[in-house]
Image (cartoon, rainbow, N blue to C red; front, side, top):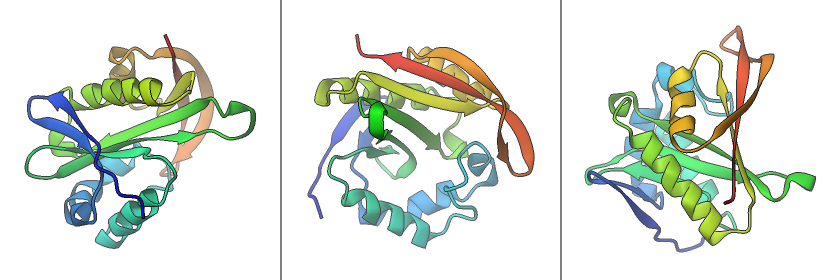
Length: 177
């Protein structure tokens, strides 16, 4: 297991930091929310159990580079932001995603976290593009991306099916420089 200790202050007592095994209880408590799950891909389980949190934390600790970070205050973790390096000819691009526990929505925390991780990606790595996508029913997350400097590049009509509902997928990108 890699020993990591990332800590990025994003203001007002909020930080991005390395996820630790002792974060599993808080992570599971905030992630086990249908309203959170509805805006994420299906590989994010629901219900979300402590075992899911433990497996997630153990899995990311084995990655060659740290790509996922806890979103936390002094008391606990209440969200995660992370990126995935895309394969093949897309290897200079990462895809970023994030979620917050519902009690923390609407405070600007996701935007701060996104800005900080984008800076981290471009400063620490040789990637040239960060991409993200949002379900058409989630304009709040789209606004987070826009406030963090992402450009909406297009709409994929009826591109996803989540919870039995078909919706558009809004595609966003941010370039180095």
